[in-house]
Amino acid sequence: MDLSYSAEDIAFRDEVRSFLADNMPKHISDTVRSGGDLTKAMMEEWHAILNSRGWLATIWPVEFGGPGWSPVQKHIFEEECCRAYAPRILPFGLSMLGPVLQKFGTKEQQDHYLPRILDGTDWWCQGYSEPGAGSDLANLKTRAVRDGDEWVINGQKTWTTLGQHADWIFCLCRTNPEAKAQEGISFILVDMKTPGIELRPIKLIEGGHEVNEVFFTDVRVPYGNLVGQENKGWTIAKYLLTHERTGIAGVGFSMQALEEVKALARKVRRNGKPLIQDPLFAARVAQAEIDLEAMKITNLRMLFKAQQQGAPGPETSILKIKGTVIHQELKDLARRALGPAAAPFPGHVTDGNLMFGPADSAHNAAQYFNYRKTSIYGGSNEIQRNILTKTMLEL
Image (cartoon, rainbow, N blue to C red; front, side, top):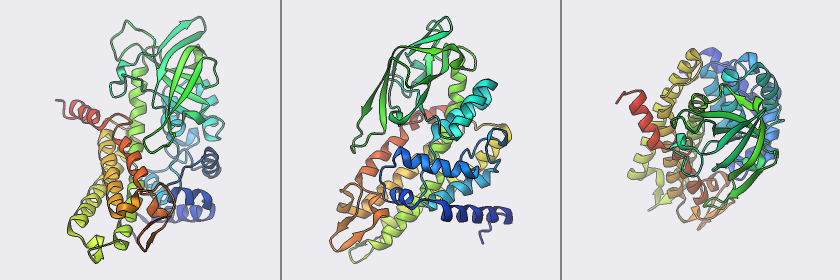
């Protein structure tokens, strides 16, 4: 019995495990386990399964279709999904836009968009970063000019994750160029099928296509697609980013990765002994595990605070920093354990007479390179340290 959980929490964990055992499609979990690319159809299938059980929008209040879970239950659900090699729930509509609409949207916007996020009718992407306005997001240049009952949008967004699959994009646009940087910005919803939108793929270093550039040329959007007050979008942007940074921490995924590193290090032999017995390697694994346990406790503490206050605070920057550093360290340890066998891309790989399985090949060099991005997106870790310095230490 796990003494850190109450009897009620243990019963909930058993319920989640049973649900995953009965409902997790094998072709999807096998793809996750091997580090393969999940298709949009796979994600839609998994989201639909969770939605049918009422477990898709885990952070939404009950009145908007959420399950009404406690912070511990949310943690347990993520942990068990990771153990079952379930895909990460896509955050853009569910964890980012959903909470924004619930706090800042009109009743009409909530009634229209929230059900369509849940049932998969609308897939969303994020229009924040621009060339020259990544970490310095307040420097964005994309303009939205009001013309009667419409906005006319011109500009460019970049690093738009999964934009090639999205039906809609939520954008930060400058609506008052005379105001100082953090002011004069508005939060606007845009249909990706609107004339004047061009999407161009960006190929990543390992050859994947996750991110895109999005160009807006005289794109006309109804004025009613504005969320919140005109020129007050910076407040919404900060609120959304606290939710994004909490999700980036990925405690459950790091717990899963840690177990895989340990299993791999017990299998691989160096100098006639299992790698896990190498003092230097073992010390790095131990430090990663200590850091992860500390982050797990911090994550739970922040979830409780968010439940009481209605939203995460600036301290989510701690989770973003530590979460990405820990996950990158685990990817590096796995790559070092695989040695030359880390070179191939997803699939079975060999090292002499030792055959590695799909879970091992998920830690190849391509995955290692891909995860270097995590300390940059969602606000670089350097910027997160500045936020903590200003907001929490008041320096």
